Image 1 (cartoon, rainbow, N blue to C red):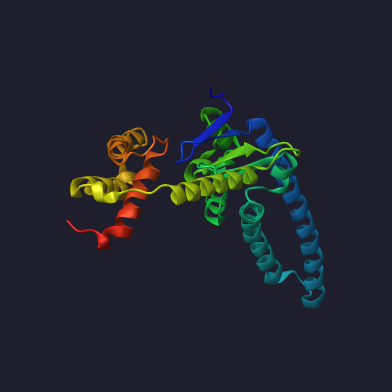
Image 2 (cartoon, rainbow, N blue to C red):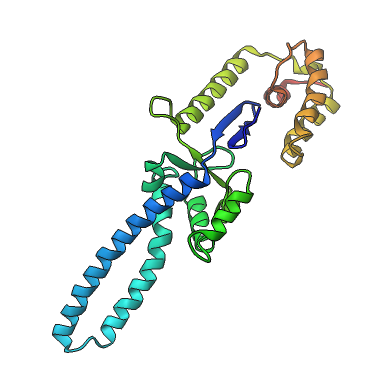
Length: 267
């Protein structure tokens, strides 16, 4: 059963990963904390600019165009600061900013993986639009209408914001790392125990396996497992292989062992 505030991601091994989605309220509070920190930084920059302006005036006798140039630089820096603040923190802190860390939130890709610089940059460049006309109006409306509480930047970057697990529980990326380790271990064990007599397979059967593996990425998500099963089940019966849940892995193993022994096979 899927809850309204829950994101379920199914891995290629048909394992479901569940994430609690961040609410609009907690995301707003996290953004408020980040913007207050940005404001504090801008106040410090403004104070420094004031002293620099006085220093320039003491040497030139007037503010002249030097102060104007400094102000232009400050405005450009402000834009870069707003975008760069979120991008740099989310890249270095694996999807977190100070505000998100305080509220125990994290940005991840919609496939459950950690975001890279690209996703962090794209989602935060579009933050300028989400801020319009004021107070994140566009962003809030978009999140309310979205099942995953995504704002415009999340849609374009392919990201979602989820809640971190409790401190006593493993973190999100520890869970993913553990899952990947289990899959690698399970696959390695299966590979070491599964021996296939690929000599029994006909050229047409091998061609069907190879064609599926080459074109499987083009198949719709709903039909891909069924297609793999239709090809794999008869081969399992023919090779006397016990039934297994991961038909795609079986086809990959058939292809791997066939290619490994192909130079020894004689028609």
